[in-house]
Image (cartoon, rainbow, N blue to C red; front, side, top):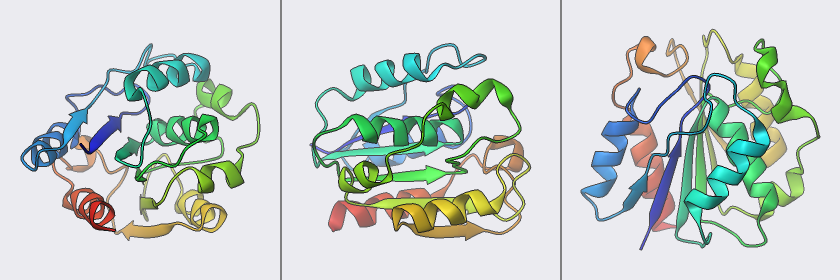
Length: 183
């Protein structure tokens, strides 16, 4: 059975943004969907998020797919570094692989990412970024696309692609996940 885990970002929670909509849409298709409440979202620590994500995912398989928003994206990239198997794919929305203006998140960047291991451990990497994100500059997504040989989708004037930017639904994510399921 296909399993999708949706990882929220800094100060986020499972019932925010487009996560409930995506969960509902995927469940209609018989997909198991988990949207965990990540620990200490106001003061996130990589070690804690990573161990929690490992516990939530359980055994990673080619039927495992991860969707992240903002800080959830770097948490997913760090998770991919720990695997010895390939998962089905990841969709990273408003993601970044280098520090941004929130210094309290710098612990997620204490070591360099293992790009080779990240690429090896997932069949697909899809990036969705906005050209006017107030937190994550577009160059972050562009650089990740180059680093990870990933497909990049740029949304115009979409802000941080969250509820505050008007996104309670995000059909592009659903479409990309469906494409990954079929390939």
